[in-house]
Image 1 (cartoon, rainbow, N blue to C red):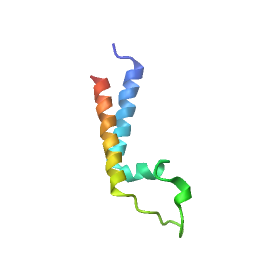
Image 2: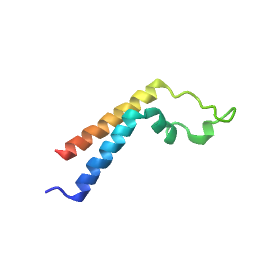
Image 3: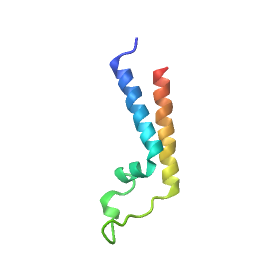
Amino acid sequence: MVDIRQLLAVGLGALFGLFLLVAPRAALKLSVVSGGPRRRRGEYGSDDAIPDRWVWATRAVGVACLAVAAYIAL
């Protein structure tokens, strides 16, 4: 029988995975991994470019989250 914890795990895993797939740059800007406020130098509103390698790694984590959510759902 499916309990509420499994449903929440599937729902949150799917939402988080979709967020990482749809908006990986936004996820990286919100994360601590990309450096946070200590990397900010220069003019107001100017951000360093996020490397494409990090974007693809974030998408891979999103796919992994979706795979785990699908495994739990089964």
